[in-house]
Length: 560
Image (cartoon, rainbow, N blue to C red):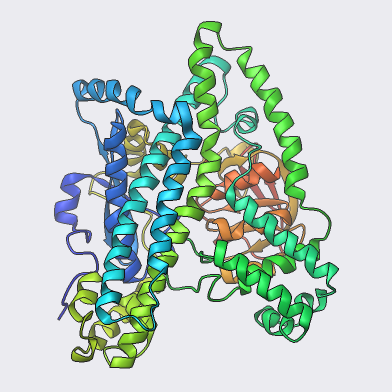
């Protein structure tokens, strides 16, 4: 018998939920592969809260955020639309005031939130998980829940504010200059900016330079990647290297290879993925090419700004230019929020969940600390103070078996009410004018043009054309397989994938939109990205030669 559902009150119920909305979209960017129950509870509970909180704080004119449901490890979302014209007008008036802090001082606004959330993380890390009492562990867990809730409020307030400006700017560009975010000139307007994720990548490159100077290349290049750390620790220079690398990890290593889960080790726990990035920079050699590429992209952006501004009537420039400056922050925020918000918060969740798990395993409530991933907070509260009095194995065993089944049977991309088709669902999406749905999670649907005779059709995330051998990467553990000159084929990408962009010639992703990770990083590296091809990872095999024409949104498999 089930004790609690995974996300009580938010599990998908066709009878009731189709009354609220006839279309629910799978968040394929974040919940493929399926979430473990503990993480699913955190995401569905607080992402929905944050989206509705952010939309209301900003009084978005057309949408009140999203509602979410959990089904078989997947997160399904629907849009909460503003229903009357009168309410839209009232909200639009308030929105004009609410967006002003973003226009006037985006950097100061974002800096304040970063300082707030980092302070919360530092407070959580003060507790010694191995010596703390069970009461203190449970209190830390509850404060981690509060931190996650606050993270999502900051996340969605900033994201809605910045990305709504992006859409407004795109609308003005379409009207005044005849361009939108499917055209190369628009991409030039929003490219050429540094961010924290790129700065972390540069630190990794600097460590590769040090490894070469300290004659440590063999430790990276010879043998299995899992033993790089062990090989380094055999020599004095290697131990000094790892001591400094450990300091870097304690500062910026609170992240996992998968952004939206807690069942993988953080870089603090296991620095192997970061050391693999160092290895790849060693193999590539040369300078940190992002900086040279950015100089060219920045020059192109400044020229594009000049050309577009010439088309804007003088009386509209006072609004157009500040809106452009804010829209240009979208790519920066997209990458930095992953570092400071999602990745770091999820690392904090993992930290306390495993800390409690170690105690529970010692006191007999579960067998293994990672069994905690199959519980949810009400069950943690049940046994949190006296785990020696409870046997939670029967819940863990059932939930693990369910999760394993979820992983074998992919969730459908949409749940549609009978008589309601995908075209109608996409029309609702367009009508909402919701920037996160249209520019991050769902994106535009590809247009099939038979005359192009392509094997796959998608949308342009970053312009350009490239040919090369395909490298299909299904999960983060396979990133070490990337070779220079490859065309990356993946379901989606995240910040942990960023360093490989210096090695590849192009990207094909099953899902994505113009403000998703692959598109933003592709533009900064000047490589073509085709998104929303849906079947790239199933139709393309590693080693096949492929051609990516992002300008046309097409992919050709040249070796069949």
